[in-house]
Image (cartoon, rainbow, N blue to C red; front, side):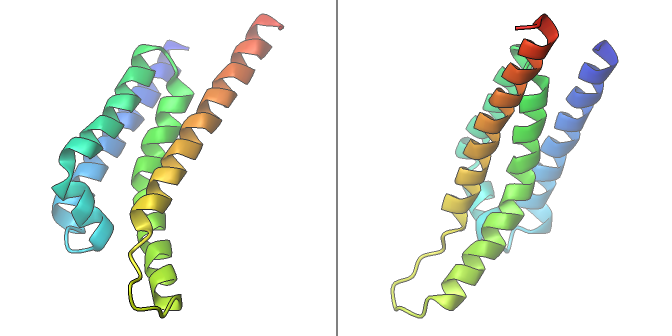
Length: 125
């Protein structure tokens, strides 16, 4: 169990470094990545959620949320671009941020459900 927790901790740290590199250096010219780097306090708050989950030993949930923080940026960016290209009205905004946040919130809820089911299985409830 401790080995698994260490592995998940390392995974979360790698994902944090990847997120930082993507938003501040590699893809900083892409809308949602640039937004995430510009609004670094918001991003820091999202990563604080991951830290809090780890402190409460919610390892699966923290890994799921940290994964979707990174992958959700890609999904939000490209779905936002697609929605903007399909909708030809004049005042269309990029929906990437909204999609990204929904993905992260969904992963948080899903992770907590998974943690609860795993706990119930462990204790035979």
